[in-house]
Image (tube, rainbow, N blue to C red; front, side, top):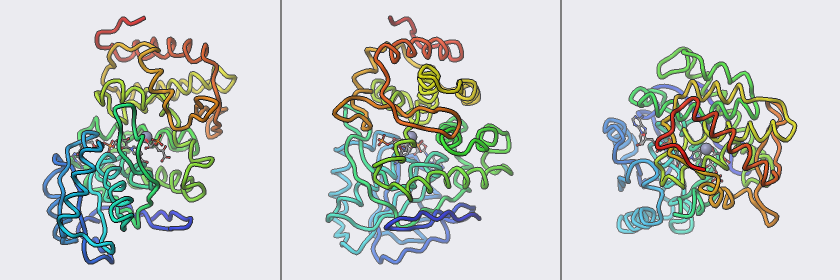
Length: 356
Ligand SMILES: NC(=O)c1ccc[n+]([C@@H]2O[C@H](COP(=O)([O-])OP(=O)(O)OC[C@H]3O[C@@H](n4cnc5c(N)ncnc54)[C@H](O)[C@@H]3O)[C@@H](O)[C@H]2O)c1
Ligand SMILES: O=C(O)C(=O)C[C@@H](O)[C@H](O)[C@H](O)COP(=O)(O)O
Ligand SMILES: [Zn+2]
C-alpha cells in the first residue's frame, strides 16, 4: 500500500492499494454515491455495504454523464433524498463520473464534502486527484466547473482487473504525460509489461505518477501558474474530443495531443522529444481518427481555458521535465498540424482520411 499526501489549504491523502473499497470510512453520516451505469456491479455493492449511502445515483457511462442535463438531474436526486449540508458526495468510477460528482459536491447546497473512489487508471493517476471538477458544453470540454478538492482519494487497485486493456492504455497517457513534464523515470516504466493490472510494476509506478500531480496541485490548486503544465497535450486533445462529440476518448486524445505538443516544442527550438510521443502512440495503439482539418479543430483549440485575452497558449517542453507556456504563431500551428496528421496517419490509418 502507498500513501501520497496532497498539501495546501485543504490537505488530504491518496491511498493506493488492493482491497480498499471494503475498508472505507468517512465521518459524514449521510452519503450520496454517484457511479456510472456500466461499472461492474460488485464495486457498487461493496461501497453500498461499507458506506450505506442515503442515495445511490446511476449516471450514463463516459462523458455522456458530463452534461448540464445529467448534472441537474443528479442535484434533484440529492434534494429529493434530503441529503443535508453535513453530508458527503462520493464519486465512484472513471474520471467522467468523478468530474461530475465533484461538481455536484461543489455546488449542491453551495458545497458539501466530496470523496473520490477512482476505478480507472486515468482516474487514479489524474482525474480523482486535485479537485478539478466539472462538465462539458457542446462548445467544448470542461467549460463549466469548480475547483473542489476531495477529502480523500482511495485507489483500489483490485478494480483495475476488470478494465478493458484499451481503457487501461487511456490512463497510461496521463501517467506518461507526468513522465514528460516532470519525472522522466516514468517513461520506460509506463511502457513496461510490468505496468498492468496485477503486475509487479503497477503500484509503485501508479503511486509515483500520482505523486507528480499531487506535488503540482499542492503548490498551485487553482492554476495560477504551474498547474497549467498538467495540460500538456490537452489543447489539441480536448478539441479532438469535442469535434468528434467524444468519439475519441480523453486518454486516446491525450496520446494524440502530446505528439502535437512535442512537434510544436521542437518547432520553437526545444529538444526533439517526438521519439517519446511516437513511442507512446505505438504502444497505446489508439483508435484511428476521423478525417480532420486544422479548420475543424481550431475553433475548439481557441476556446481552451489556457487562452487569455491575448490568445491561445500551449504547454510546450524545452526538454524532458522542462515545461513552459507559450503562444505559437498561427503558421507554425497549421504547419505542424500537417506534420502531426502525417505522423498519425503513418501509425494509425485514419477513418475516411483525406481532408485538406
Ligand atoms: N478532473 C481532472 O483533473 C481530470 C483529469 C483527467 C481526465 N479527466 C476527465 O476524465 C474523463 C476520462 O476518464 P476515464 O479515462 O477514467 O474514462 P471514463 O470515466 O469515461 O471511464 C471509461 C469507461 O470505463 C468504465 N469503467 C470504470 N471503471 C471500470 C472498471 N474498473 N472496470 C470496467 N469498466 C470500468 C466507465 O464506467 C466508462 O464506461 C474525461 O471526461 C476527462 O475530461 C479529468
Ligand atoms: O488537473 C489538471 O490541471 C489537468 O490539466 C489534468 C488534465 O489531465 C485533465 O484532463 C483536466 O481535466 C483538464 O483540465 P482543463 O482545465 O483543461 O479542462
Ligand atoms: Zn487529461
